[in-house]
Amino acid sequence: MSKPIVQLIEQLKSRSYQHKKIILGFDGFIDEIIHPVDKRIDMNHYTRIQSLSDFAKRIDRASGLSTNIELYSIAEKIGGNGPIMANALAMYQGDVTYIGALGYPNIDPTFFDMPSNVKLYSVAQAAHTDALEFLDGKLMLGKMKSLSDVNYENIIKSLGRDYFIQLLSTCDLFATVNWSMLPHMTEIWEQVRLDCLSSIKPRQDKPIFFVDLADPEKREKEEIIKALNLLKTYNSHFKVILGLNKKEAYDTARLLGIGNEQSSLEEIARGLYHYLDIYSVVIHPVDQSCTIIDGKYAQAYGPLSKKPKLTTGAGDNFNAGFVFGLLLGLNAHDALLMGMATSGFYVRQAKSPTYVELLQFLNDWDQNVLD
Image (cartoon, rainbow, N blue to C red; front, top):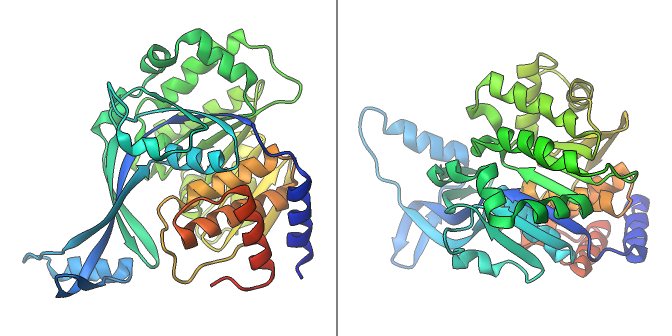
């Protein structure tokens, strides 16, 4: 048996995991899960385009001509980095408040599928994503006009300033994700700091402030740098953590001039950590993850699935598992394992695990009986 996983299982069995106070925001999508069709066999059967490269070749062959690709809708589900992460944290019995673009003036019924321990506050219409699923990744086609209504004024209008400050002053985790798709997120951070944190006395045991940029490639360099430099201003009240997938990490490092394609994962993590001057940076490639906390680097390998049922939201489930592990007092390496186990269960079962299911998954991982 693997000693690290066995020790993690024993720790998780002995920790009190319920009722962590969590605030998340501020995006909101309805995700339509889609299979691009390769061959239509009959009305009820088809074969999928297997990979992103095969899909790209199909499009490339149509250059100068035209083509038709059938998109077969599998399901509609809650989407957006925030709602998916909130849903995963709620499965661990967190006391979750979610604020975002969930439908306006009424919340879209799609979001009623979230667990009952999630309190929902909507500030705008939900955006929509066509999520094209392949065996090696996904292509997300977003319709995001409504996200321009996600701003500080509408957040305060929905919750009330006093209640929002109360939530911030008592939370264990404050997470704001999907920065790249929310045009007013940087301004929200600035206004929360100036209008809310100025009214809150810093706690000795600081809560976590988790941020996920979510593929910032589409944003201008000056915008990205401004947002990143703002994170350290939260250090007085929070343990600030920046989460990135591998592409986001390398893109951000190149933009800041602290790394390139030849840099190791550790070099990228350390470079970002020292530039940002925050509590932690965590990076999650598909088959592994790493983090640096208080200057100490940790890395772990995960249970890669060869045939995932669902990949859209895998990173959000990793983030949920990782930060929840830190809330439980796990060390950096064990928090990485918890993040990868949460994500590993999700891609195999197309849903986030309960705490009991997480423990069983860790046991199966240790026994090497996963796909």
